[in-house]
Length: 287
Ligand code: SIN
Image (cartoon, rainbow, N blue to C red):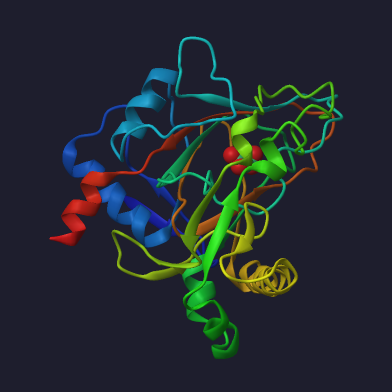
């Protein structure tokens, strides 16, 4: 198979046609992996996928990741419903820039989202290419983060006193499950080498990053704020527009993403799987 790949023309992202994601052979998986590493966000329109197909597709790229704060859908322990009802008044889920679960020791390599109910307008997902952001970064800012080790935590979102915690809005339709484990911390360097492409990239963002090792909070937050302003500049972004039956997969190791609103009065439902940390590709890359 040769995939039909149309780059978005923006800082990352491509639309891919010519593959049936429910029935791929090894050669097709290898082509998709190469395109994923190249474009960082891939969109596959017109895919008829059951939940079992979505799980099987995900496992082509690594093990399932651990989703610590979502309840799964019935019968599919690795699928979470990203849902919002037409009349829901809760705060928008995932509206802040982030990479997924960076507070874990071995954060996920990627994420798959499959569009089931898509509103007629609004609800785009935004991405920002963190390899491009690092490549274009002014030397002065880069020199201040070159060896910095960031402290990550899920507490701002998923602790009992976090945004999705005990005081969260009553009518949230998503099954978010906050708990005390969100207070834990984990460190990762701010500049990391992508394990498969070898490219250097910025990793994560203020929000899940709550401090920098060896730096006092005031200095760290000033630096993280300045860095944030650079990470999300328009020229590094891709705006993804959804269609029903479209699958999108992104590379959590080198892009940030965020949800957007603008679809009040309409339901929105996507099924999500997490591509976990894949030790096998790291072994191959290090040979
Ligand atoms: C997510 O961050 O998993 C959801 C993104 C979206 O709803 O657009």
